[in-house]
Image (cartoon, rainbow, N blue to C red; front, side, top):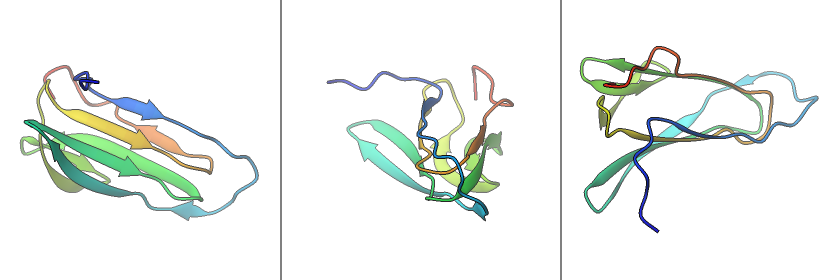
Length: 94
């Protein structure tokens, strides 16, 4: 199946009753000519901020190698916990 270029793909699985704050990790992968940033949450409560800065996508203020443009493919797997994913500031051309 060919990946569909989406600005943000969010996959969320929420579990109640887990406390604390955890951080999320991200990886850059290349599949053919498509670069994808995959953000993976933890079992705890994560806050994941996705932004565009200096021409690249950032995750929690850490720059990735993914260019901030309409071809950006971002996958977020939140995992368990009561997670917050904020990509509100991304525009169509980010």
